[in-house]
Image (tube, one colour):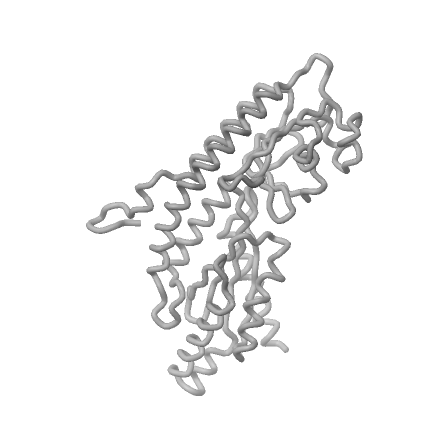
Length: 321
């Protein structure tokens, strides 16, 4: 992205907080995996009732991108006041009833807080077997490292807030002349920004691809001015349905895309219903498919492909009915 006279745009001259946090998190988990008896270490994100493992040194127990209900996790018990270091899960009454207690023999963890002082996630480690008598874990070290990650996270979020505001302003400047929505170039930029947040912080982000039904027949039977009117009305309806967490774009002739911040995979179907309902209320027929990114497993580009395939399947079903 270039500024005037080939100079870098303002957002590219600022420090990258997402990259800095990723580097810190990966160094911490690598160090702990090497210097403690626990085989697997993770910096995880807690959001929408789930714990997602984002930065992982894995061997036996924890895998990158793994998701678990927060209420069923060891880390949830720890954050509620149970021990930070568990030598033998099945022997600890605060942990023995958890369904993963037979798989996780020993555990250690401390919470990480964000720049608002709220729970962001957990620095945690585990292995399949209990700790042996001679094995020790330095609880104070784990606490200190979690506090350092909290400080790094606070700085990274603040840096990226300024950097993102400039990047988003630049993206929003690339609009579609007919609908006023983002154009393809602006869309690509907001997707790239969102992918950085998914990779670094495990932020939940979902996408939807929407295609109008029957635009060609409108153009052929009534004229292109009527088709343009349909596209304009679609843009208005999508703007009305969108909230501050959304970015909406026209990415092709009759194809639109929606990026939704804060939406997890299990929330996708219900979340995007707001757009289809608003289009139906405006008398606009469209097919929509949605999908969510998953840190370490599904990129936003891959989620877009899934959403596009779902949209196409629904469009074919509508034609056949």
